[in-house]
Length: 346
Ligand code: BGC
Figure 1 (cartoon, rainbow, N blue to C red):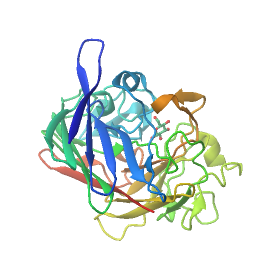
Figure 2: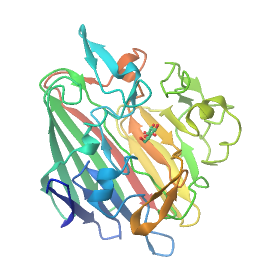
Figure 3: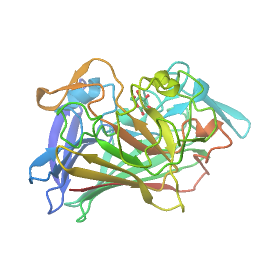
Figure 4: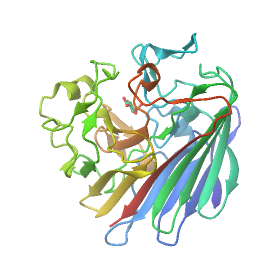
């Protein structure tokens, strides 16, 4: 593993950038701030090294960033309605940071914290973080770990592990913004996406909270069971897409087991790079990077909305308040584990 200083905070704390790789040209850099993926370099069809995630060049830009570029997100990723939940007769209040709801655990979420390096090899690194009882609003003192491993079959494997001394919520994801034609190469909406999902979780309205229903994708703009350009139906006038200005929806993975299974395959036609996403999670959020305006990213490149897509593996949004959804609750002392794999080929 290579390590270098990535920047310094206003109060003098250094942030680091760690780089791991394999013998096939896959190289992944991660900063300890937010356990965030800063770059994923993959060889394209012409063997050209191509960075397939949006990001920034320095810690200082991550400290100002508002888009969770590559960040580890938790204790709970996605939304919790009313920024509150009840467990065993007690109500836990979270930060309201998204129109009355909690998004990605708020400003004390793990995306905005420095993690400690626990272990590393040439192709893997593990970061750890202690999150105190009620620090984000969730019960229990928690020990959280995330590992990034680059394998010889050209995959980035992300493993989450967490344990708390009280019953709590654990639901981690990574928020990489992918563009398989290379970050900064323009719109990502031409990427061909297939999702192994016959159902998705529609929203009640603006705000992105699911109704609780598992709706069929058949005959809707949410049908990605056969490869389809991500942006193909964005202009179709769909009411659900109107609530969020594009895709920002959770799909129900057609899982046959509790283990790691393929959830999505995406293909960048210009680079020839294909990415397969596998996970043990029940859901995957397709976010078509619906942000407005532009952001100045790596190498001064301008990123616009829709220049990337996110595929965030997760428990369903608001699952802690929705009895019909698989529960993100972990018992005291129980070990939460979850794995997501992003595999690249061409
Ligand atoms: C959410 C979006 C949000 C984005 C950046 C996604 O996971 O679903 O609504 O804008 O993260 O915070």
